[in-house]
Amino acid sequence: MPELPEVETVKQELQRAVVGKRIVEIKINHPKVIKQPTRTAFLKGLKNKTIKNILRKGKLLIMELSSGKSLTIHLKMTGQLIYPGCAQGSRVSFRLSSNKWLDFNDQRLMGELRLLDDWKALKFIRELGPEPFNLTVEQFKQMLMGRKTKIKPLLMDQTFICGIGNLYAAEALFRARIHPQRAATSLSSKQKKMLFQQIKKVLNKAIKYKGSSVDQYLQVTGSPGNYVKYHKVYDRKGKPCFVCKTPIKRINLAGRGTYFCPRCQR
DNA sequence: AATGGGACCTGCGCGC
DNA sequence: TGCGCGCAGGTCCCAT
Image (cartoon, rainbow, N blue to C red; front, side, top):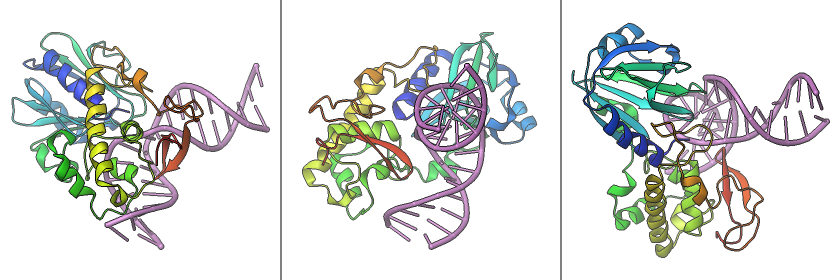
């Protein structure tokens, strides 16, 4: 499940690997992942264009092209970008001027590729909340004011704050010792501050370790991310809490599996 | 405003 | 052992 740290890792690696290279050939093995525009326009708009820059906004990757257009890529659940790839079994592959392939793999076919005139006009982008690293603790506290909704689904709401998904929401709440079902507005000032600090700390450390390889995520090189060994609660149902030995609980919250320590998190 | 559900999608793991 | 069902979650969308 690529979240901010995974997408940021891919962004940094793509910046090193493919910026300055030209797209010379495109293979579409599964057209479903191309959401915009038509297949023909997609091919025509990408061929012989140079990759100028790679950006990340929330969990969305943006490749700026020499034509002024941009290729946006959302990895969703099982998307991978692999370079150099092999163009075998990929959903879409791009042969670059290096004569190597950049592969977009996606087992569950939920990923989305778009070729856009203006990525900033995308609804997802217009409605995106602030990046956690662009916020002050005071701003974060204000954002929680009056929000009666449960804190964990709120952290995962991309229009509230962007980049946090199921895994890092669970990990940050554990470290802040906050129960995932607490009403956001009910957190004490101290807890809000603690939560904000732990969100940034968890995301930063996960970036440092190049993400969490659970399920399908891989780095651009094809190597797994190394943050899984630091998970405290995610996917640890029934296993002892590292702090108090109480078995980690899993509940369903807003339709998502939610892991927490019933003793440490209040 | 908040909440709940379904849809998309495939492979895996579980229970019978 | 084999089969079928539920689950995994990012995002959108609809209903209440």
